[in-house]
Length: 491
Image (cartoon, rainbow, N blue to C red; front, side):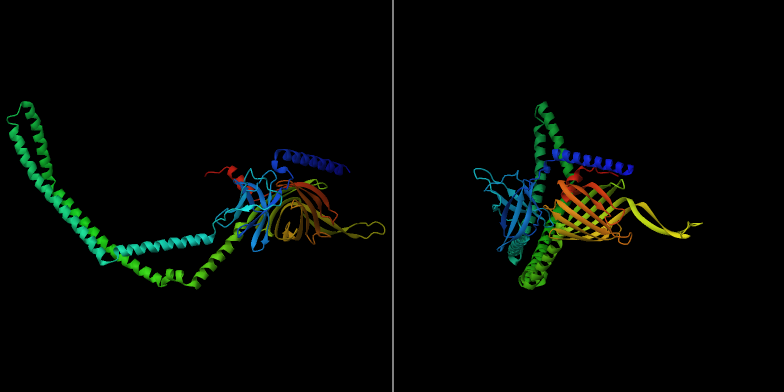
């Protein structure tokens, strides 16, 4: 009786702590409001890359989600759920934008403004210009290829004939003659400089002392120049020889360019006739269809990856009768909205219970009682357990099967109130006790990401217990927000 009283006191304390946590979270978190928002819809010609529950942004800030996507005639109708604090006007526009290179898309809204009136609940919102598609990129690449073809044709007309080669040879010949004239001018000026020095020397004989000193210095400078020129005449001739070699290299390069242009002409002619890989790619309809099929196959492979979601669950439950806490860490990998793979690690103080039977002898036995009787001994040890399950959702129900708490098991989740209320039934540990272990759990999302859970464990056996706890569930977007604040370690 005293243990039951202590368990009740602990349970009451847990309830008070949970209630206080909810009150504080509702006071701090602006997302605790229960407003579901209002609905609008838009009509698109193509919604490839959009999925239900995708984000709706204004200026990069989430303001709603995609509620549903369905056909409206030969076009697509997208229903949106918008936060009531966000005002949209009748001149608002919505456009589809790419969120990543893998093909994921989202919707961006330009809310508009006065003097237009606010848009009503359930009304249509105008659609802006569509985003760039893969077909547009392929078309642009085709235009670039056509431009390259025109450039090669122009180069062929400029250098791919004998007349152009003759003009290039004539230009190189004129350059050689100009360099030879420069060489002759240098030698002629050397003799003139010597004659000028002789005249200056005769003038200094009758000049005043100051002028004589100046001219003496000039004479010395000119002699030094003459000496330098005389000592480096071989180097100058060598430099002129290198210039001749450069001209010869230019002439060889022009011949090589002419040969390359002939090869380019052959390639372009083969391409125009549909020969070779590029020619077949531009003229063979069958090959083009095969390439389009490969692109479509790659798109079908990448699209599920772009929809892949990772959801992490952290849950702690207090068992009233056992007076213990049971903790769960779960990872849900969800490639599609209607299916996921679930891995969970459980720290269970009740662990695994084993039963053994033994023969007990009573000597001497009581009157009328047998000498031997059987005794059943149960032993419970702390242990870590794990779950590995595959889940499939059909409408409002999700069915699970696989390994549940280290034994074969089945499960079913009922989703209500826009997935904010869940009723979970688990059946596992068949054959370990008299009856299979059945657990019933109710979960309610009181605020965004925070759930309150409670229910009954092992309902069919004498070891049944009641529990109450809390759960955190967050997805990729929450992980992206948390990662920048995790300190990086350095080696």
